[in-house]
Image 1 (cartoon, rainbow, N blue to C red):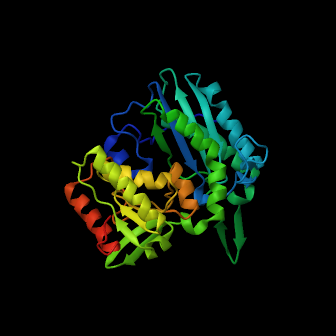
Image 2: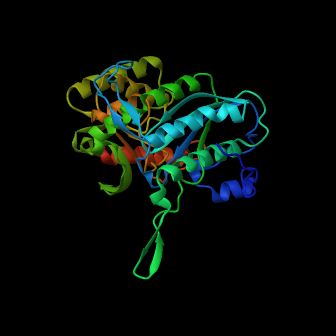
Image 3: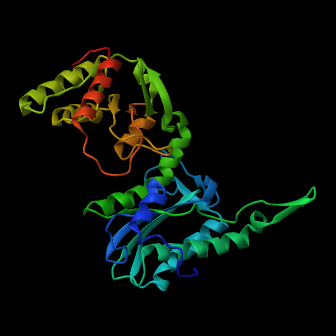
Length: 343
């Protein structure tokens, strides 16, 4: 891995950082990226080219089995793996707590246990440069100049990864366990997505009953008999339990529940239905990116056609509290889609 000082780095300039870096690649404000922290870093291959490997295995296999979905690395994928494992040799202040090389992107969990001599971005830049060197050696044709019809044309700009990287900062104790599970499960999730592409493609500009929204999941759920779940925040535990029981009876008869899951009662009822594997439609305050996918148990529910996530707004990366106006809009959306039918 090559190390080089970033003369044009914008990591430490908050104004440039927030103005010019794509939203999914912004750095955390007021965060010292040299101090003791655990990060999950994601690097994406330019053009989403599948250069690092192919997925193999059986999605019906159990974790730990030899045939559990996994990535068989290419020579370039092995070279990237070697660069990742070399990181602590260049920076003894950190360790690699886990990584997953996917066909077109890489996840790395980095534990900075002692103060780094430089911004984490410089560490990542060195890693990228080392991977680029291997890429140029293995794919010289991507950097060749083709001569024809009196003019030259460069086939590629020679960049392996997209500019910049995404980082997630460990914020709570259980997050590391979640990250490690996510990395280990990533090949299986990719195979599931390949098996059910329609359920994992974000669809834009869906028009339904005078509404327009984006969604991911099973759009055919909109054709089912829908029941809106809207609960006052002042419901007692007994009243919430009664709503759960009514909801389960309705779902057993073929109804699909729809709700933005804002109040504690709404969350509890929708969770009870979800845990019984009944289909449901969830309305989101935050929009969907082009590469969005459900997380956790919602992923498998989506693969089974039991879930639809819908959002009337664009995606945002900053943390926001849902406003009263947004609550009204989402509840009105649920009412329109369900033709005013409530539980």
